[in-house]
Image (cartoon, rainbow, N blue to C red; front, top):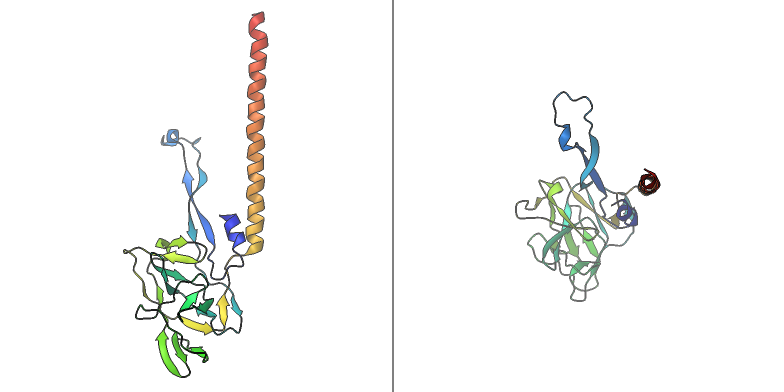
Length: 227
């Protein structure tokens, strides 16, 4: 998880994953009043931090960023996908699409078609115009339970029928900018080094225990014949 976070520190719209801890206790620790019973933290699952990343100005009219909560809606191979990465392009058939080729959907669920070479203007509310003509409005959505979203790749999310998308509130579109990853590279690097050192310590502890067991067996083998 930490390595993946660090690898995607430069991926637009990437949301950092973090671990969720709970307490573990052995089955024989259930005796009431047992002061010797101990518990220790254990990682139960990971969760996604949806806090906003840093806005990066690009000057490209097809680069869009969201200020506030919400996601762009795009058409994936198996259904709707949602992303914070607003680095878009115009596909060969004239549709506004992601760099992976997924068409960006408008408020009516249809792809936004770009015609001609005229300048494209995207208003803060997501309305898209070209040469002064209205050509659609971005479908910007949010979810009541973002924790129920599943990750697809590095910057796409998918939702279940039990968690349908709803119109995003208090969200605006910034044209000519993209949202960077919300990963703190220095923090992730330090934590990754710490985990690697802990792993090495455990390896040494296991090797030491193995050597002690082997030495004990050797000692028994020498003592038993003399007995």
